[in-house]
Image 1 (cartoon, rainbow, N blue to C red):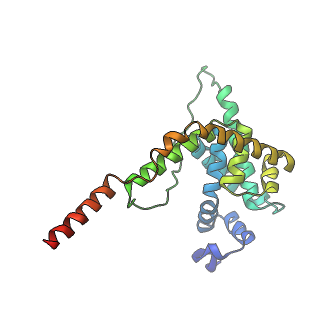
Image 2: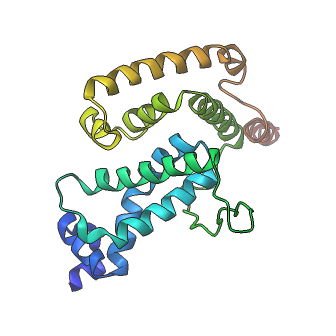
Image 3: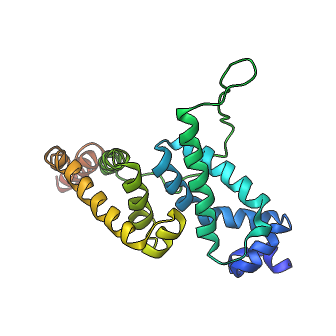
Length: 228
């Protein structure tokens, strides 16, 4: 037990689960951190909104840890958690179409006191390139969001999260052949969508202005000054 409290990352999954069942906070945090990125991406691929995807994750984690004693390791913990996230996200979509009404005939607002998961990274050394990469990422994210939901979720699972065909089929309750077909179609649609913008993107390739331009200019001027 003491080893888990200090280094849960070295524990086998089954041991980590047992500690989490006992409400060990370190084990719970370890499980969340290991699965956050994958589960967020899967949730977002369904609800198409960052904030709502965080809502989905919070509710899914609460549900998962409350019923963790029912996990029988017939699948991986990751697959089990992903199924919970998919179910919660799909329920959110259904509530969008038909929001619940209270006794006074008013639809309640969804809670927004969600846990915000920190993003990794560091201060950019090259702000121009960082801006160009951000614009490209935004374009790609918009193209992914525009895909049909069934294709989008398979693409996120297989490509962004590198999940196997079998694992993707398991948590989506599909045949492996269907997963392969949807991935193929998703890639084709994505290429077609991005092709419309590629010429504009090429104009921003290999940026060398702003901070980088000023840095080089100063270096040349300094050297010329020293040369007399």
